[in-house]
Image (cartoon, rainbow, N blue to C red; front, side, top):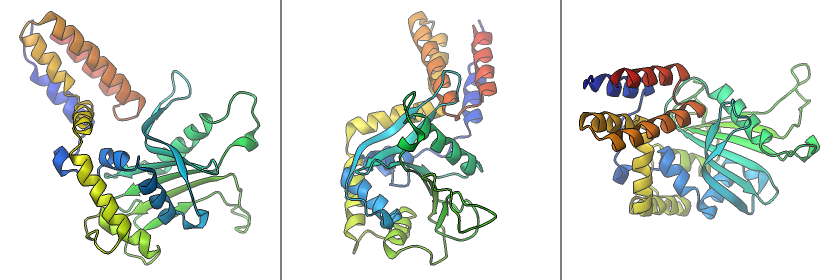
Amino acid sequence: MNHNTNSVDERSVTALELPDEVDYSELTLANDFMFSKVMQDKELCKEFLRRVLPELQIEHVRDIVAQKYMKHYFGNKGVRLDVYVMDDTGARYDVEMQLTNKHNLPKRSRYYSSMMDANELLKGENYDKLSDSYVIFVCTFDPFEKGMHRYTFRNICLEDRNVFLKDGSTRIFLNTKGTAGDVSPKLLSFLNYLDGKLEPANDAYLEELDKAVRNARKNEDWRSEYMTYKDIKRGSYLHGFADGEEKGMAKGKEEAATKVDEVMLDLVSCGELPESVAEKIRQGLKAEE
């Protein structure tokens, strides 16, 4: 048996192109895990949506789900939405915190929007029953490099720009690095706070957000969940597999191998790990036997 385990570890971690790790006690609202947890609070989530979409005059939100997994067919690519929420009119929102520019947000937002639609209608239902949907990416970079804090997209007729498709689908990209005076003072304050450029004082909502983040850092259940979340991101169960093999722990090795496969299937289905890389990892694990 070959006990050289480094090849498995290096291959898995490198393939995922992971960002620098942050200790749970240092997480800010700009972290997708922390953002999804804090936004489970209905009042905090509602105020965020009201600042992004004041024209909707949202009064109530419900059915908030953090890290909601959606998949249409068995062989299709699944998605995990950071924050999925509905308002009192039935409109649906997906809010995503995005820290790195993978240059795929336009088509990713299209896929997320279509997945939300595909999971709403039952067989035989009329298309008119589709509720309005909003996919909102909160970016800590400028996705279109135009200096705006906000980019809003709706379907419009190119031949006559006064004609809108009115299909109820809206996609919004917020940018904490914007320089244009294109958003309300309240939304600008939120984006500046998220980017670490503004203290929460003098804005009651930001103070509540900051308090929620501090309380979340003390939540031991969430801390444990975050550690598991990091393990999945890093593929560290591969380390567990290698350790189990090195120690000759048959049961531990079998359990670790099963966990590795589950983790890889989850990452592949959510688009965080290419299938080709997953297959190479599987081949590497077999070679170690």
